[in-house]
Image 1 (cartoon, rainbow, N blue to C red):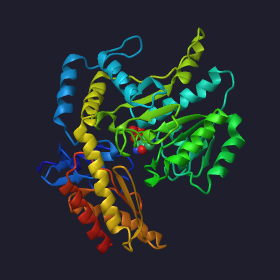
Image 2: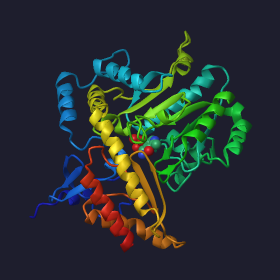
Image 3: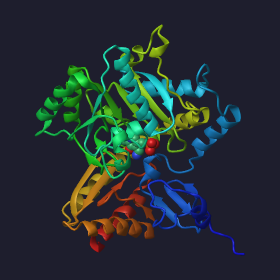
Image 4: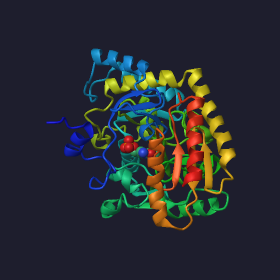
Amino acid sequence: MAQRSLAERDQAVIWHPYTQMQTAAAPIPIVRGEGVHLIAEDGTKYLDAISSWWVNIHGHAHPYIAEKVAEQLRTLEHVIFAGFTHPTAVELAERLLAILPDNQKRVFYSDNGSTAVEVALKMCFQYWSNSGQPRTKVIAFHDSYHGDTFGAMAVSARSAFTKPFEQFLFDVEFIDLPNAENITRLKEQLSAFSFQLSAFIFEPLVQGAGGMNMYEAKYLDELLMHCKKEGILTIADEVMTGFGRTGKLFASDHLTQQPDLMCFSKGITGGTMALGVTTCAGKIYDAFLSDDKLKTLFHGHSFTANPVTCSAALASLDLLLKPETIADISRIEESHRSFAARIAKHPKVRTIRQTGTILAMEWETGDNTSYFNSLRDDLYNFFLREGIILRPLGNIIYIMAPYCITNDQLKYIYQKIEQALEQF
Ligand code: PMP
C-alpha cells in the first residue's frame, strides 16, 4: 500500500485553527525552516513574508536560539513557578524591565498573547475590587483584536469570530481610533463612563487582525493623558507591535505617556516558543499586597515562566539588541517607504500605509463584495505559487517579515506585488 502523505495523515486527525475543515485546501506540509524561508516536504521554498503569524523576528530555526534552548533543556526544563524561581525567569524579567517604559515594575508570565491580555484584564478588575471601589466596564477600539480566550474576545471587536459567544462577553464600550477630528468627542465619551471604567485597552499605533489600521501616536497620547486624569487604567497590548515591529523596540516608545500595563507575546521568543508576558506599574502591583489573602492574584498556568521558553526569549533579546538588527529594522523601514511611494498612485491601490517594518495596502475592489471574497483567495494563491507567504486580511495585503530579510528578498516581494496589481 502506498504511504500516505503528511497532508493526508494530517487531514485524518487534525483540526486546524481558523479553518473551515470541510472546504479548506490540504495544508502545506513544512518540514524545515531556514532564515526567512520555510521549506516544504517536496522541497518548495516559501519566503515567509508574514513571519509565521507575526511571531518570527530573526528567521526560522535560528542557530543561536537553538543552541541556547538546547543548553537550557539539558540544565533545567521545568519547575513549578509558585514557591520556586529559576535563573532564566529572573534574568528575563530584569532585562525586559530595563528596556520597557520606566514605570513598568513587575513581570507576570503566562504562555500566549491571549493569556497576557487575560492577566492584564484580571489585574485591572481586581485592582479596583482590592481598592474597595469595583469598576466593571472596559473601553476598547472598534476593530480591535486582543485574542481568542473569553476575556480577550470580550475586549475585541464583535465580529463573525465572536458571534456564537456574544452573550457570554462582558460589558465593553467601543470607540473609534483617535484623529484630529474626533479626539474631543472621544474624550467626552470616556468621561461619560469614567466612574465605571476599569481600563482602556488598545493596540498601540497598529491594529493587527482588524486590518492593519494605523493611527497617530499624538492622539493616542491625548487619550492616555485623559485616562490618567479620569483615573482609568491603561493597557497597551504590544503582542503584535512589540520587539521592533514599529521601528522602535516597543510601539509605546513612540508615546510620551506610559501605559499602566503592557502585554507581550509573539516576537518575545523570536517566534521560537510560546510565551506571554504582562508587565505593570508599581501601583497595580501594590494594590495586591495585603495581609488579606483574598487580595492575591489567583492566576497561573502549568507552564508559567518555563525555563526553556525564557531561555529562547533571552537569546532572542541578545539578537534583537545587536546594532546589526537595529540597522536591519531601519533598512526594512526605508525600503518599504520607497516601495510605498512608488505604487501609491496605482489605480488598484486604495490606500497604502506603513508603521516601521509593517507595510499594508488596501486593494481597490469597487463595491463588489463577492469579488472581494474571491480576491483574498486569489491573491493568497498567487503569492504561494510565486513562493511567498502573504496572507491577506480580506482585501488588505501586508508585509511583516523577519528582520533578517535581505534587500533582494524584499525586492522580489515588491516585484510580485506589482505583478499582482496588474493581474487582479
Ligand atoms: N493581541 C494582539 C494585538 C494580537 O495580534 C494577538 C494575536 N494575533 C493576540 C493578542 C493574541 O495572541 P495569541 O494568538 O498568542 O493568543
